[in-house]
Amino acid sequence: MLKSGIPIGRIFGIPLRLHFSWFFIFALVTWALVASYFPDVYPNWSLTASIITGILTSLLFFGSVLLHELMHSVVAIASGIPVKSITLFIFGGVSQITEEPTNPKIELKIAIAGPLTSIILGGFFWAIFYFVPGSLEYIIAVSFWLGLINIMLGAFNLLPGFPLDGGRVLRSLLWWRTGNLRRATRWASNAGRGISFLFIFGGIWLIFQGPEWWFNGLWLAFIGWFLGNAAVGSYRQLTLQQMLQGHEVNEAMTRSCINIQPNITLDELVSEYILPTGNQCFVVVDRGNIQGLITLKEIKEIPRVKWAKKQASEVMVPLTELRQVSPHEDLARVMKMLTEEEINQLPVVEDEKIIGMISRENMLTFINLRDKLGM
Ligand SMILES: [Zn+2]
Picture 1: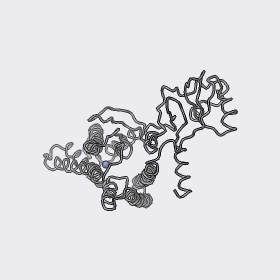
Picture 2: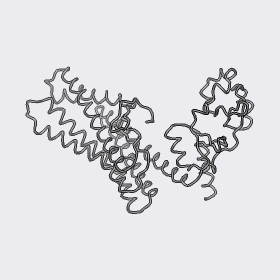
Picture 3: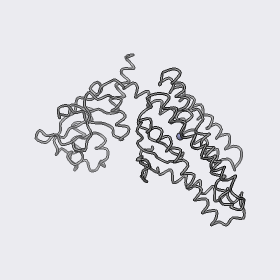
Picture 4: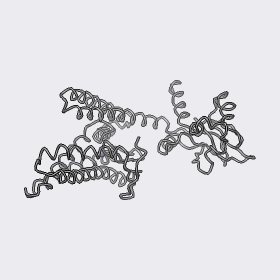
């Protein structure tokens, strides 16, 4: 979900991105401030004053979220773990930290850095609120709200359910005690699911508390649902990574890639090569030279009515654009590569020859088979 986003620059060398859902939450927060919060607390403000203060407050709020994420990333980088990007989206921010921490102490430090930043920031805004003279009404309004929201943000993230920051803290402590990352992740994810159910039920309960509550209820349930999915998803991913680790590409790859001519049409390819055999991987070869690869993905991207005219050479991914893996590459690394780059399969190359393909499905089948055989 969060792979896409508009790049908006870099901080400390980390690319920053805005996911499209960010604009929705930005508008929502601004609207809630301008239409409801400011008029309630400061009925004497003009609409223009409310709008300007509202937008400024929203911007500072998102600056606060960014700082929270930035501190996770800075601590990660200082611990030797690269950070790929920071994306702001509907539920706040997410740092794409590319590797699992190597020990529980590092994970604890990375996890706690964010909420701690939010709480300190909240204290900072409340200090402004407290010390600024009462005549500076706009500054008072903005700093009070930002103090409150940052402390809420810090507290929410400290809830002990994985993959929230608090859940990561819990996981690191369990990992520290048991020495078993997978078990620690399972427990922390279960806590995350528990919290997600509480949110969903709490949200549904709120919806029935009267018309002024339904939106908050819906929002709470929505957050709960998202959290539950993330808890299950991140546990599954870790399990998958661990099951693949230590195995090589040649144990799971498809070896039967079929050579085809560059001028064959997609219609012919589908009716003569794919449907009768179930084969899904084709190497386009012209006079003994490999030109590129075609998989089902490339075919699906072409509308069916054009299949009779399009030739393999027009649709293939050229060899020069393909990343390749060696048959001895670790499967866990390949899975990560596929996930991060959002590709489905990679050619396996040895001595400059394509000897097969490795796909997500190959790896899942590999794990399933081993699981069935009790390996
Ligand atoms: Zn965080």
